[in-house]
Amino acid sequence: MTALGFLYPGHSAEDDYPRIEQLLGSDIRVDLVHTDIGEDAHRVDALLEMGSAGRLAAGVQELRHAGADAVVWACTSGSFVYGWDGAQEQVRTLAQTAGMPASSTSFAFVHAVRELGARRVAIGATYPDDVAQLFAEFLRADGVEVVSVKSSGIITAAEVGTWGEAELLALARHSDHPEAEALLLPDTALHTAAHIPALEKELGKPILTANQVTVWEGLRLADRRVNAPELGALFTREPIVQV
Image 1 (cartoon, rainbow, N blue to C red):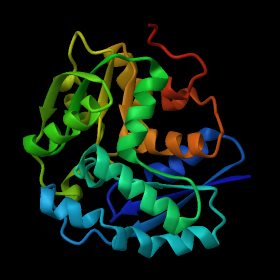
Image 2 (cartoon, rainbow, N blue to C red; image 1 turned 60 degrees about the horizontal axis):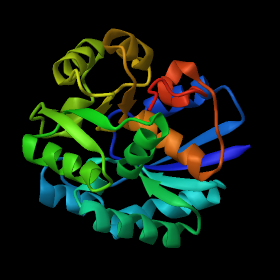
Image 3 (cartoon, one colour; image 1 turned 120 degrees about the vertical axis):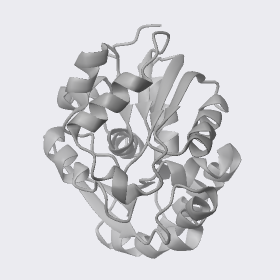
Image 4 (cartoon, helix red, strand yellow; image 1 turned 90 degrees about the vertical axis):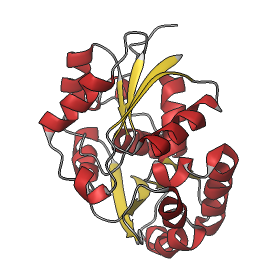
Protein backbone atom coordinates (compact mmCIF):
# COMPACT_ATOMS: atom_id res chain seq x y z
CA MET A 1 0.00 0.00 0.00
CA THR A 2 1.27 3.45 -0.96
CA ALA A 3 -0.14 6.23 1.23
CA LEU A 4 -0.11 9.75 -0.19
CA GLY A 5 -0.61 12.74 2.10
CA PHE A 6 -2.10 16.05 1.00
CA LEU A 7 -2.49 19.33 2.84
CA TYR A 8 -5.56 20.95 1.31
CA PRO A 9 -6.51 24.57 2.08
CA GLY A 10 -10.06 24.96 3.35
CA HIS A 11 -13.05 23.28 1.70
CA SER A 12 -13.79 23.74 -2.01
CA ALA A 13 -13.05 20.79 -4.31
CA GLU A 14 -11.64 18.26 -1.85
CA ASP A 15 -14.05 15.62 -3.17
CA ASP A 16 -11.79 15.39 -6.23
CA TYR A 17 -9.33 13.41 -4.10
CA PRO A 18 -11.46 10.38 -3.19
CA ARG A 19 -12.66 10.38 -6.81
CA ILE A 20 -9.07 10.27 -8.04
CA GLU A 21 -8.26 7.54 -5.51
CA GLN A 22 -11.07 5.42 -7.01
CA LEU A 23 -9.89 6.11 -10.56
CA LEU A 24 -6.34 5.01 -9.76
CA GLY A 25 -7.74 1.53 -9.15
CA SER A 26 -4.63 0.34 -7.36
CA ASP A 27 -3.16 -0.05 -3.88
CA ILE A 28 -2.99 3.73 -3.46
CA ARG A 29 -4.45 5.50 -0.43
CA VAL A 30 -5.12 9.23 -0.52
CA ASP A 31 -5.09 10.95 2.86
CA LEU A 32 -6.30 14.55 2.99
CA VAL A 33 -5.84 17.00 5.84
CA HIS A 34 -7.44 20.44 5.68
CA THR A 35 -5.35 23.47 6.56
CA ASP A 36 -6.63 26.76 7.90
CA ILE A 37 -6.64 29.20 5.01
CA GLY A 38 -7.16 32.35 7.05
CA GLU A 39 -8.73 34.85 4.65
CA ASP A 40 -10.23 33.27 1.53
CA ALA A 41 -8.82 35.63 -1.08
CA HIS A 42 -6.77 35.26 -4.25
CA ARG A 43 -4.69 38.23 -3.14
CA VAL A 44 -0.93 38.13 -2.70
CA ASP A 45 -0.80 38.98 1.01
CA ALA A 46 -3.56 36.50 1.87
CA LEU A 47 -1.92 33.78 -0.23
CA LEU A 48 1.45 34.29 1.44
CA GLU A 49 -0.20 33.80 4.82
CA MET A 50 -2.15 30.77 3.58
CA GLY A 51 1.08 29.02 2.58
CA SER A 52 3.08 30.01 5.66
CA ALA A 53 5.16 27.34 7.39
CA GLY A 54 3.07 27.48 10.56
CA ARG A 55 -0.21 26.81 8.76
CA LEU A 56 1.27 23.87 6.86
CA ALA A 57 2.99 22.40 9.90
CA ALA A 58 -0.31 22.24 11.76
CA GLY A 59 -1.57 19.44 9.51
CA VAL A 60 1.61 17.43 9.16
CA GLN A 61 1.33 15.41 12.37
CA GLU A 62 -1.97 13.86 11.28
CA LEU A 63 -0.47 12.74 7.97
CA ARG A 64 2.55 11.30 9.72
CA HIS A 65 0.30 9.29 12.03
CA ALA A 66 -1.64 8.05 8.99
CA GLY A 67 1.59 6.60 7.60
CA ALA A 68 1.93 8.83 4.56
CA ASP A 69 4.91 8.09 2.30
CA ALA A 70 5.00 11.62 0.87
CA VAL A 71 3.20 14.92 1.37
CA VAL A 72 2.10 17.55 -1.16
CA TRP A 73 0.87 21.05 -0.34
CA ALA A 74 -2.27 20.92 -2.47
CA CYS A 75 -2.39 24.57 -3.39
CA THR A 76 -1.10 26.32 -6.49
CA SER A 77 -1.48 29.99 -5.66
CA GLY A 78 -0.27 29.46 -2.08
CA SER A 79 3.02 28.16 -3.45
CA PHE A 80 3.91 30.02 -6.67
CA VAL A 81 3.12 33.35 -4.98
CA TYR A 82 6.44 32.91 -3.14
CA GLY A 83 8.37 32.86 -6.43
CA TRP A 84 10.64 30.03 -7.55
CA ASP A 85 13.17 30.25 -4.73
CA GLY A 86 10.57 30.90 -2.05
CA ALA A 87 8.45 27.96 -3.21
CA GLN A 88 11.50 25.71 -3.04
CA GLU A 89 12.16 26.86 0.51
CA GLN A 90 8.50 26.22 1.33
CA VAL A 91 8.70 22.56 0.31
CA ARG A 92 12.12 22.07 1.91
CA THR A 93 10.69 23.29 5.21
CA LEU A 94 7.63 21.07 4.76
CA ALA A 95 9.83 18.03 4.08
CA GLN A 96 11.90 18.73 7.19
CA THR A 97 8.80 19.20 9.33
CA ALA A 98 7.08 16.10 7.96
CA GLY A 99 10.14 13.88 7.81
CA MET A 100 9.18 12.68 4.34
CA PRO A 101 9.48 13.79 0.70
CA ALA A 102 7.40 16.90 0.00
CA SER A 103 6.29 19.09 -2.87
CA SER A 104 3.51 21.50 -3.88
CA THR A 105 0.99 21.84 -6.66
CA SER A 106 3.10 24.53 -8.37
CA PHE A 107 6.06 22.17 -8.71
CA ALA A 108 3.63 19.41 -9.68
CA PHE A 109 2.69 21.48 -12.73
CA VAL A 110 6.35 21.99 -13.63
CA HIS A 111 7.11 18.27 -13.37
CA ALA A 112 3.93 17.31 -15.24
CA VAL A 113 4.78 19.64 -18.14
CA ARG A 114 8.18 17.94 -18.33
CA GLU A 115 6.53 14.52 -18.23
CA LEU A 116 4.40 15.40 -21.24
CA GLY A 117 7.37 16.85 -23.11
CA ALA A 118 5.43 20.06 -23.70
CA ARG A 119 7.45 23.16 -24.58
CA ARG A 120 4.66 25.72 -24.92
CA VAL A 121 1.63 25.98 -22.66
CA ALA A 122 -1.45 28.12 -22.16
CA ILE A 123 -2.91 29.00 -18.76
CA GLY A 124 -6.59 29.22 -17.88
CA ALA A 125 -6.71 30.70 -14.39
CA THR A 126 -9.65 31.38 -12.13
CA TYR A 127 -7.55 34.01 -10.34
CA PRO A 128 -7.33 37.77 -10.87
CA ASP A 129 -4.84 38.67 -13.58
CA ASP A 130 -1.99 39.78 -11.31
CA VAL A 131 -2.01 36.41 -9.52
CA ALA A 132 -2.32 34.50 -12.83
CA GLN A 133 0.73 36.34 -14.14
CA LEU A 134 2.73 35.20 -11.10
CA PHE A 135 1.99 31.59 -12.08
CA ALA A 136 3.23 32.29 -15.61
CA GLU A 137 6.43 33.78 -14.17
CA PHE A 138 6.89 30.70 -12.00
CA LEU A 139 6.68 28.41 -15.04
CA ARG A 140 9.03 30.60 -17.06
CA ALA A 141 11.60 30.31 -14.27
CA ASP A 142 11.88 26.64 -15.26
CA GLY A 143 12.11 27.42 -18.97
CA VAL A 144 8.47 26.75 -19.90
CA GLU A 145 7.20 29.00 -22.70
CA VAL A 146 3.82 30.44 -21.71
CA VAL A 147 2.05 31.52 -24.90
CA SER A 148 -1.19 32.75 -23.32
CA VAL A 149 -2.61 33.63 -19.90
CA LYS A 150 -6.35 34.07 -19.42
CA SER A 151 -7.76 34.98 -16.00
CA SER A 152 -11.32 34.89 -14.67
CA GLY A 153 -10.86 37.44 -11.91
CA ILE A 154 -12.40 35.32 -9.13
CA ILE A 155 -11.34 36.37 -5.65
CA THR A 156 -12.42 33.45 -3.46
CA ALA A 157 -11.86 29.70 -3.56
CA ALA A 158 -15.40 29.29 -2.28
CA GLU A 159 -16.79 30.75 -5.52
CA VAL A 160 -14.48 28.62 -7.67
CA GLY A 161 -15.72 25.53 -5.82
CA THR A 162 -19.27 26.15 -7.09
CA TRP A 163 -18.24 25.82 -10.74
CA GLY A 164 -19.49 22.79 -12.64
CA GLU A 165 -18.69 21.18 -15.97
CA ALA A 166 -20.20 23.98 -18.07
CA GLU A 167 -18.06 26.68 -16.45
CA LEU A 168 -14.98 24.46 -16.62
CA LEU A 169 -15.42 23.77 -20.33
CA ALA A 170 -16.00 27.46 -21.00
CA LEU A 171 -12.78 28.33 -19.16
CA ALA A 172 -10.82 25.72 -21.14
CA ARG A 173 -12.18 26.83 -24.51
CA HIS A 174 -11.56 30.50 -23.72
CA SER A 175 -8.01 29.85 -22.49
CA ASP A 176 -6.70 27.51 -25.17
CA HIS A 177 -4.17 28.77 -27.69
CA PRO A 178 -3.28 27.16 -31.04
CA GLU A 179 0.45 27.20 -30.24
CA ALA A 180 0.02 25.61 -26.81
CA GLU A 181 0.93 21.94 -26.53
CA ALA A 182 -0.92 21.67 -23.22
CA LEU A 183 -3.46 23.71 -21.29
CA LEU A 184 -2.96 24.31 -17.57
CA LEU A 185 -5.85 25.00 -15.18
CA PRO A 186 -4.19 25.96 -11.88
CA ASP A 187 -6.61 26.03 -8.97
CA THR A 188 -7.18 23.18 -6.48
CA ALA A 189 -10.53 24.79 -5.63
CA LEU A 190 -11.74 23.85 -9.13
CA HIS A 191 -13.56 20.52 -9.59
CA THR A 192 -11.87 18.81 -12.54
CA ALA A 193 -11.31 15.11 -11.74
CA ALA A 194 -14.51 13.95 -13.46
CA HIS A 195 -14.01 16.02 -16.60
CA ILE A 196 -10.41 15.62 -17.83
CA PRO A 197 -11.11 13.16 -20.68
CA ALA A 198 -13.92 15.40 -21.95
CA LEU A 199 -11.65 18.44 -21.81
CA GLU A 200 -8.86 16.66 -23.68
CA LYS A 201 -11.30 15.41 -26.32
CA GLU A 202 -12.74 18.90 -26.73
CA LEU A 203 -9.35 20.61 -27.15
CA GLY A 204 -7.36 17.79 -28.70
CA LYS A 205 -4.39 18.20 -26.36
CA PRO A 206 -3.31 17.30 -22.81
CA ILE A 207 -5.01 19.16 -19.98
CA LEU A 208 -3.25 19.60 -16.66
CA THR A 209 -5.47 20.49 -13.73
CA ALA A 210 -4.42 21.32 -10.18
CA ASN A 211 -5.87 18.36 -8.26
CA GLN A 212 -4.86 15.93 -11.02
CA VAL A 213 -1.20 17.01 -11.04
CA THR A 214 -1.12 17.18 -7.24
CA VAL A 215 -1.96 13.48 -6.90
CA TRP A 216 0.40 12.62 -9.75
CA GLU A 217 3.16 14.50 -7.90
CA GLY A 218 2.48 12.50 -4.76
CA LEU A 219 2.87 9.31 -6.77
CA ARG A 220 6.10 10.63 -8.30
CA LEU A 221 7.52 11.36 -4.85
CA ALA A 222 6.58 7.84 -3.74
CA ASP A 223 8.21 6.40 -6.88
CA ARG A 224 4.92 5.00 -8.16
CA ARG A 225 3.54 5.15 -11.67
CA VAL A 226 -0.12 4.36 -12.32
CA ASN A 227 -1.75 4.01 -15.72
CA ALA A 228 -5.18 5.66 -15.39
CA PRO A 229 -6.52 7.01 -18.72
CA GLU A 230 -9.60 8.38 -16.95
CA LEU A 231 -7.24 11.00 -15.48
CA GLY A 232 -5.95 12.14 -18.84
CA ALA A 233 -2.73 12.04 -20.84
CA LEU A 234 -0.59 12.63 -17.76
CA PHE A 235 -1.67 9.27 -16.36
CA THR A 236 -1.12 7.25 -19.51
CA ARG A 237 2.12 5.44 -20.12
CA GLU A 238 2.87 7.21 -23.37
CA PRO A 239 2.66 11.04 -23.48
CA ILE A 240 0.39 12.49 -26.18
CA VAL A 241 2.81 15.31 -26.91
CA GLN A 242 5.84 14.21 -28.92
CA VAL A 243 9.06 16.25 -29.07
